[in-house]
Length: 373
Image 1 (cartoon, helix red, strand yellow):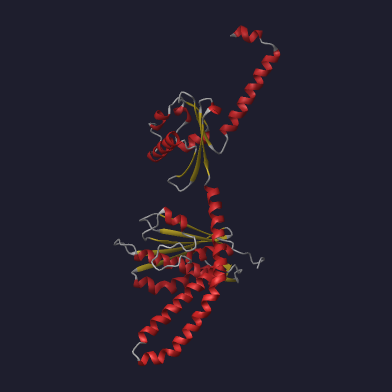
Image 2 (cartoon, rainbow, N blue to C red; image 1 turned 45 degrees about the horizontal axis):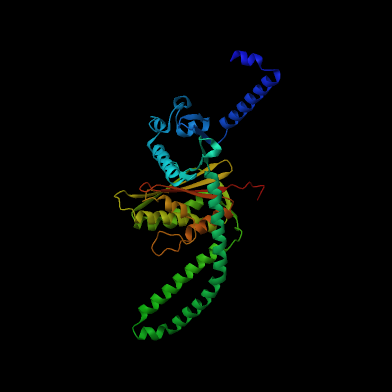
């Protein structure tokens, strides 16, 4: 071997050194990718794993050297959740020849897993894992905006046409009311008028959700806004045996520039949803709704938490979609309208929930400087 190296000319040595430099360069690139990379050779033995993949698996790289997939699954550092996911992906790849997989981990993050094998890999098996949570969020936001745009077109085209005849019907019913009272049918009139008003309320929600109008902003104290919401919902909360608790210590006299009517509508909607969650909570725990407000740099964070029944992942994924509702008789427009209002204010709205552990909504709104006003 030594004699072969000694007999190699300078040209051959330079070629060897260049190939080593290229190899080291590519290994360095793989080491620093934001995607996790793991390579099994044709014998099924782990040949390479980068830093990111070791971090994702939660296993030191040195302890994985020379492992087969079976040995890796038995590693004490691999959690049960990850072990189940790896086995599922392995089965889908082997039996269904599936090369791309998507999964959501225990923390709600989305991952794209890609398998590369076949002739181009000369028997090796390459697995890459990438966090696509941000892409999913962007995709969901775009999908949400498309649905709201479609809702706006539908609402604008039909709402006025329905509202006009309803107004005429309501007027004629009121003219006929004295005659119906003499016939003992006053209850019918009451029900008809109530249903017409309910239909008008639904149409109003349609129109509200389709209006892209800019907020008519005024300055208001966060403290006074939330106190007013608590006051408006206090009686309903008492009737349902619930307690509403305000935590306002962190905002003092912080003021925000918002359309007061619209933002109040959003917060009232969230509090009423929380009260409804208490209705459906069959545990013996007293209902409790907590409202926090805090200032973080140039933003105000408003959190509304309840200890109700919580929501599963399917509900969470569709929560802000127009017409999606879990309430009997609900329109499915309340949260989609709230989403649009907050976005029109340059803010954001997010939700965290687990079945049996309650729900927390987070509204983030910008604080406008006086100079900007």
